[in-house]
Image (cartoon, rainbow, N blue to C red; front, side, top):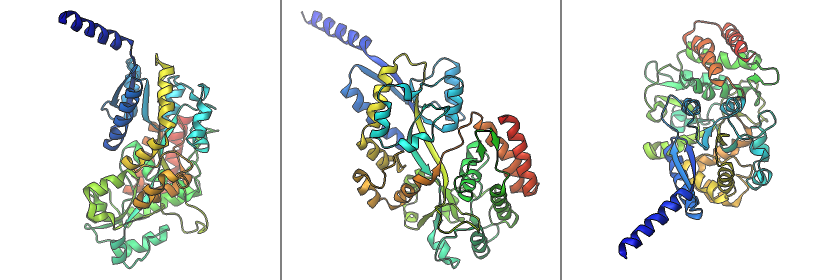
Length: 417
């Protein structure tokens, strides 16, 4: 009798296992995000035992984009993935890999519920919404208040000339520098230097005209930004190699940072946190003092791949996640990154968080002025060219400003056109 009971239970479990719908879900390889998604997935599976969510981080590769493209090519794409930026979404949509979410039942209601109407408009690709934006991270300037005061500055520099003046007072050659101007040599580093400076100087103007598919950053705005970069390197007020964690170690007084750095600072350098002052990126001297300063939005979202065999179940999971205000509140607690919502500063559910997290609150103020990357399919190639033809010549003094801009524009337009 006991044997029959055991066999019966095993059969029941086997039938149950085969009756479950499996969804493969990939998320960003980031410790704070992993904690968030682990809890969300566990709760959904508890509420929906008929759904088995096979959750993991995006496989290790040179980049998330590379890992996802490799999975698509080998027929192993997930059903759902996060960590998708607008340019990569355009690329995936262009090769027919994404579900147009705006065509699914309940999309408009979800957009209204999460208060992301104007935000999602910036993610549209050829009139369709392929992405649910998860967060929008303005890139802002961090300053060490004590180092500013040591150089005679009660307030952080706002303009290029003010940074030059600060640099003259602060820099000790081969020992400490003014600010980190260039983020690195990777294609994505251009988001966190030239593109951020360009958005700031141009009041959010795009560096790519996506209607004409032409690069446009060799204009007056681009000239001012490029001259700023060149001036900082020519005078040795910044350097190519600034060492490990230069901001926290006092090797520089300022650098561009995203809100994800708050958790790192609190965990690794708690003594520095109270010394941090956050401002928008620097702007040219003639920038109107009464106008808001725009910046780059390191914004990522979620997509459903059209290879999914369980679109209805995948969409139900997505709707459930983004209709929960408490999840956006939990996301804030874990990651310090602003959810892609229009009501961050007016919704009561977030009020206590801003009160106890003043650094994160500074980022919330700039979400309305944070502009995502240009939605083009050739982001990687375009920004690799920016590095080789524009940034490196300015850093090493091998070209003048106009020549560097013109060379970059010509090479990029050959790709775009």
